[in-house]
Length: 324
Image (cartoon, rainbow, N blue to C red; front, side):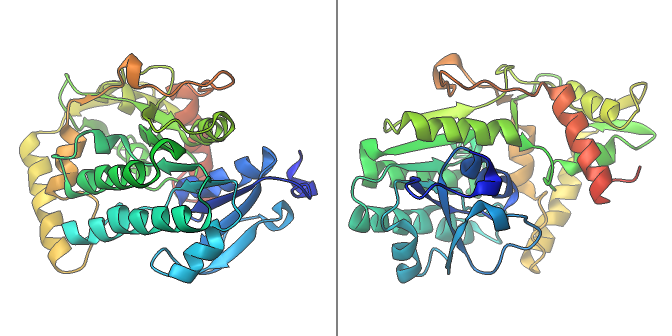
């Protein structure tokens, strides 16, 4: 169904949290194109989106608001829980959103829409909860959803997500502009990834299949992941620097940057690279075993790393985030 037409009168309703974030801005139109009537929970009008012709319903509020949760899920045919916190000053901050708000949402689903399937878009970091407060909070959110909703729930863990609009992987392309490009981790490290449009297509496929009370990971066709050199070579090639030179950044430098980040956290500056984020960054096994991979009859990742990074770099330049 073309998005210009809006949803059909009898279209199934999907309630979405986190709709205005990086992934959400891609997921909402993908769901609408797939024939869903999309209902989103927002604190304010989503600036920078062109959703006027998609027939999107909005519920004002956030997940702390019991009435807003009721309005969001009541009568829904499915719920996609995408909202989450990736920056917080402490463990309590992460848990308040990634665990407690997830629990509250699940309780509202159980109370108002008992048979409604729910899909939690978590993170591959949740597989390693001891690494960081963020990882532990995402794992706790998964546990809450599966405990409360059981077989009516499905947990989808995206690998590292990249693509147009993502500020976290923008750093790869900025580093690739340097005279010599730094490699951030060891030669042994492997990182699996997924392009954001491929991720959204997988989520749409998951809704069509229905939940099974399980956990699976969404990654591209190379589930064994990429080494840091491959990632940075792809970023450099995407900005026209296929002949760039590389060097491995000493761990002490990264640890120093993380220490500065930790100090910044104490003064309210939620920098991404603190000690905990560094542990995630340097973890050596972000691969996806065969039995953990998400599969669906009509889904496969379209973007190889080189094509996906080129697509992202073109968007960054057009948006003015990356110099031409």
